Length: 213
Image (cartoon, rainbow, N blue to C red; front, side, top):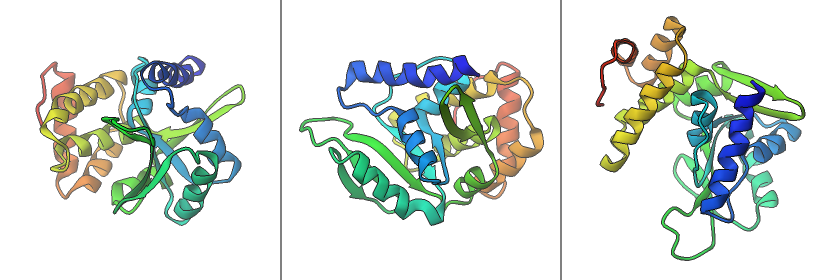
């Protein structure tokens, strides 16, 4: 586990090589822990943990428990005042104020209004501890369901589809023993009937098939 948590630090270091105002996910998690904020780390850094491969990513992404969202946002405003606060429909982003940035987001706080997100925060998450580092992430089944939801989302651009599909396959291959009941339950939270489709996707990947969602 220690080595895998270190992948989060390595991902931050890789990100810092690309952008000089990259945010360390472990530092944000520590802030939330100190303020008793209900949160779960998702996105590229979460993938680094489960796949065992550090990857550069320009932003850090968290689902925040509904009642804690306003407080979490205020804490980020204070701790990361160098970023510009943007209120979106379902989330809040903190963007670099540097001009001509293709991907300006540095921190993304997502509301748990979607049933899958609420279930991840309330039930399908685990707390990782190594020395003084603490961070909450989705269970592997929840991580797979989140990536499945992203893969089929009409809001994701076509350019992201190959990456989403590849990430989904990596997550499925990362753990040979998945909780099939959790896969069905979480997939069903994506959409009615999604449990069976996600279970079929898991089975296809295990059989060595390439998926395209």
